[in-house]
Structures are given as C-alpha cells and as structure tokens.
Image (cartoon, rainbow, N blue to C red):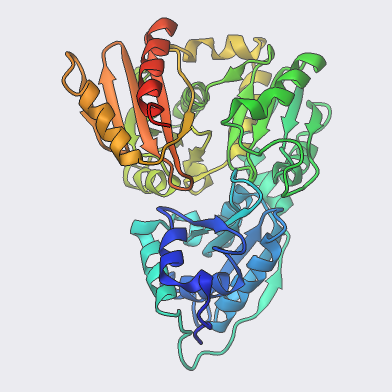
Amino acid sequence: MAETQGSSLDPDNIDAVFKAYDVRGTVPDQIDEPLARATGRAFVQVVGAADGGRIVIGHDMRPSSPTLARAYAEGATEAGADVVMIGLASTDQLYFASGHLGIPGVMFTASHNPAQYNGIKQCRAHAAPVGMESGLREIRDLVLAGSPAPEGVAPGGVTEQDVLTAYAEHLLSLAPVRGRRLKVVVDAGNGMAGHTAPAVFDLVGTEQVELIPLYFELDGTFPNHEANPIEPANLVDLQAEVRRAGADVGLAFDGDADRCFLVDERGELVSPSTLTALIAARELAKAPGSAVIHNLITSRAVPEIVSELGGTPVRTRVGHSFIKARMAETDAVFGGEHSGHFYFRDFWRADSGMLAALHTLAALAESDLSLSELLAPYERYPLSGEINSTVPDQRAVVHAIEGEYGGRDGVTLDHLDGLTVSHPEWTFNVRASNTEPLLRLNAEGTDAATMERVRDEVLALIRKDC
C-alpha cells in the first residue's frame, strides 16, 4: 500500500533525511508519520522480517517519538511482521533488546540534536548495524518507490515487553562494581539516562554508590541544557555539582544515553580518548592480544597504549555502522570514539554509554586512587576537544586547508574521513557533520602550546569568511 504523496515522501526530502547511518530530520516537515510508516514497511522487507518475522521498537522522550514509533509499527505489521514494543528506552537498551531477543531493532531518537529533531536508528538481529552500505540504501530506495507491502501476507501483531531490568542486569554482569563506596553525580540532561540510570544504580546498591541525580526528569524540550555533552557549556552544571558534593566522579549522558562523558573529582573534563585507553586496558586484560578499534580522531595515545599492552590497534572512520562492521571483521574486543561512543564485543559490538560508565566506576572502586590519579597514565597529549563551526561551503574550506598544509615538511595527509593532517609534533582532523551544517575540528599536540597554535591556525582558516 503506497502512501499519499506528501512533503515528507518527496524524493528530495527522502534523500535529505537518509544519512550515512540513520534517518534524521526536523519534525514534522521532514520526519512525520507517513515517512515512519513507509520506512517500517521497507525495513522489515530488507532485513527479512516481513511475513512472519519479528522486530523490536523503542523510543526516547521527545514529544514526537511515541507517535512516530506507533506509525513505524503500523508499517511493519502491514508487511506481515510482528512487533515487540519496549516503550521508553535508551539506544543501548534497544540494542540490548535486539541482542537479547535475537531480532532486528528500531530506535526513535535524534540523540543530542535539538528538540525539533527526531530520527530512526535501525539494526539487524543481534544489534548488527544498518548503514548506507549495509541496508539503509535499500530501505531508502523502497521508500522512494512507495514501499508497497508484499502481496498476500497476513498483517502482523503488536505486543509490549519490558526489558529494562534485564538490560541493567546484563550490563552489571559485564562490569560489576565492587570495592570502596563511591559518590557519583549523574547528569541525564532530561534525556534517557533519567530512565536507565535509576534501574542500573538500584542494582548496584546504595551501599556501593551514593547517586546524586541531575535533570532525571524526562523532557524532550531539554529545559536545562542541550543533551549534548561534547559541548563544554552543557557540562557546567555537572562540574559545579561534583565540586559542591565532593563527588568521586561525574557522568554526563546525551539525549538517547548511548554516549557518556566523565568529569573527575576536581570537576575537570576527562577526554573520551583517555576513557577509551582505560577501558581498552581493562578489556585487553580479559582478552589478551585482541584488536581494539579507535576512530581517526581519538588521541594517538590510544594506539600507543593498545600496542604497549599487546593488543592490535585498528584505525577507522567516525560512525557507529563503520566501527561495528570493522569490529566484526577483526573480532575486536572493544572500540572507542572521541565523541563518547564506546563499543563492546560482549554487548553485541554495540555502543553503550552506561557500560562505559560502569567500567569507570568498577576501576575506581577497585583502586584507592582518585579518578584523576587513576587516569593520569592514559593522558599523554593535550587535545583541543571537538570545535564546531557553521561553514557555508564546507568543501571549499577543507580544500583550502589541504592547500595550506599539504606542502609543509613532515606533513602527511589522508582522507579516510574528512581531512587528517599529521606531523610528528601535532595532528588535526576536519570533517563535515553528517547531521548538521557544521565543520568539526579536533587537534592534538605534543604539548599544550603546540596544540593551541595549530588549533588557532586551523580555526582562522575555517572561520575566515564566516
């Protein structure tokens, strides 16, 4: 059954919202119920769940998410699939459901994007990724064709299932927290960590962790700050509360709670590269000699440390579908991204901010060190963090940067993802966002002065005509 043609189903809009590894856009002009319904019909056909198969659907706290999820379920059942609805969920909770139930999964969320956005993250059974090179293009093409349901199939049904407790139990089986009692501040940013953190920390127990919650109320309008912890402004409240409470650690989650950022006992931000190195060390201790994935923006300290610990570092481009595919190819035990995404072989190669947080708490509870002392061996080079700039012509700016640096002595260039410029004393990457009109810069140096000089030089080029 084809939908009546409308703005969301116009070919130009479909091409615009189908990104490299998800579907994302503004509601209701780009993402609406007809688009969700058509995508549901297409998805179950591409992943082999039409005509008697099953899928699982979860959604975040955005006002539009429940309605869009129901429309998607209607499309899936029209194509003969049975749908398991888990209701409110973090993205890693949806991945757990897909792995635990062994069926394809769908999550309605726009992650850290502002309130007017929504999106669809999709995976095959056992949380296997669906990106443009692994099924999303075929889904898009079916939507462009009207995504007709297969002929002669009986409609599927919808059931509800609560998997929150099972999710929490599984995470704690992978990273049990034992040892000294910790004081932990968690900033959920009015996102889905306000749903998952209470379930997880209830199982950890008050005798092990004193939990201090910030913004646990689920509110997709984000009344306190954007649920995007990669932006320093969104960590100010967490930093202040850690200092005020004398906490051991602060945890910040994004809107769909699949990313986690750390603040140490001083209220200082911990680089995701440092946390990547810590978790890599823990996972390599359990699986010696394994591969560890790091994207090209993580600190060069990460591959150095992995190699020193006997592991095999594997460099990849940014994005969960690419990283999960590379993990499958290499049987990597773990993967980390600069953006706060952390991937675990024991979690169906999916990313889980909460599991990364539990690894941190487990390492800290087992030690008599402060978090800053515990992490000091993993911090080697000053990093700029990710700096975003709105750029009208991203391609031209990247080309100009390449021309500026390409002929310099000791400089190498590569285009694995955006432009990476490397020198023995520094490196930087500039890449366009997949979801917003931004150019992202990450820089690193052997010392702070070098990093700051390179950072400022490149920012001047990026913002020259802005």
